[in-house]
Length: 200
View (cartoon, one colour):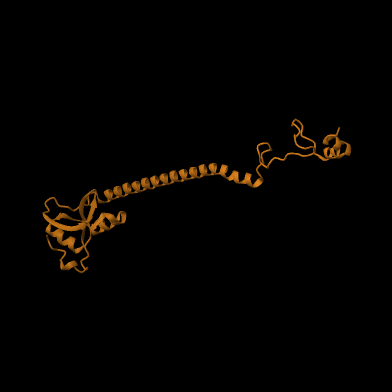
């Protein structure tokens, strides 16, 4: 009876030698059913093998994405704080401007109190431009002459036009430049050949 291939290999010593050179099988895993000494290799990254661990470069790429959210929230917080500071600053400026305007009005009222020369029986109108409109103040014939010579002036207080002396008008202008409405210069050339004493 002929010997089997296995018996022949055992006698020749080849089977023992191949088994000795083969790596030991991992514990808990069945030995491969293939030829003795042959091991089945699985492709890299297959389900049976261990999952590849991310390298340092891959971990570094993930970190910035995670850190962007806190940075973005911080930027929004800074922007909100800046907008709040700007609003508060604008409000303080508006309040300060309003306070200064009230103080100027009070100083003008104190300066011009009882110094208006408007006559109750004045019937002669003196027209002048103010605020992109033509305004007028009524004065006596003598006041009209003095107004056109620059001896009298027109100032505005609380929506009213007051005739005052040139000196009082200069003091009012020092408090608020917009308070002085009309102060004629007798030496100035007439505009459009219209004399300043023209009544119209």
